Image (tube, rainbow, N blue to C red):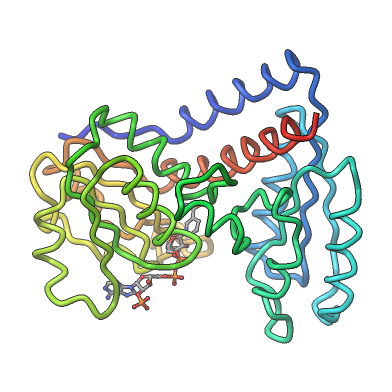
Length: 284
Ligand code: NDP
């Protein structure tokens, strides 16, 4: 039976380390979160981010714009936050309404306040191995991976998914950790064989329990990024959350695995706070 990597505990430890650093270094980090529209999942994420920030000693401001706000209005708010010295981190919650171009908004954020690490400057710096804001979910994946593997050099790592926010940056981080990295996606031939040869398997697909337990190599470490809500007869209203990996069967073969919920999810917010503290420190 695999080691179940406890993302809740690791995230809690990271948040308390950040709180201690903020106090010891007399930092006054500030995080501005911008949300456009009423998407219920985004509302929950934004509330959770604001609460976690406050609990860690980070001042947070939530800016709410209506769903019909124009791109110009959002750009004006971003410009205002770029120029606000109390704001060290700016996060624009995605997805944005269709009439707003997310790339234009991300590119307008000051790269030195881009605590999501999505700005082209930070993405470029990451790929060059230069200091940057590392995107939060990939950063969280790597911290959890290190809970289970100390020596990553030479390991075969497979990332399933090639999104800009998870797949590509986590692949960069695995490369920096000296893994031999493969990125799989919807056009990959024989995904099963790719999975079966991976010492480290990172699933960021967005399809419930897509990676079957018997695709997992014996002794592999599995990091499941997926968050999928599926039907639950025991709770028809809420359903339940599952990852992209068939957890129980995969745990029979893996050396270590992250659960969903309670794995990568909590790490994403903790790493956002870490990036905000890093930004505040850069400005002393
Ligand atoms: P995207 O939809 O942007 O990307 C999904 C990727 O999966 C794509 O690259 C796609 O390939 C690939 N894919 C889809 N179908 C297949 C298939 N049949 N075989 C192989 N690859 C496939 O998703 P995200 O990266 O944004 O998110 C992935 C998951 O992670 C989601 O469940 C999301 O909710 C979750 N997530 C969790 C976070 C957390 O905090 N834990 C944070 C962010 C995301 P192609 O490019 O060819 O279409």
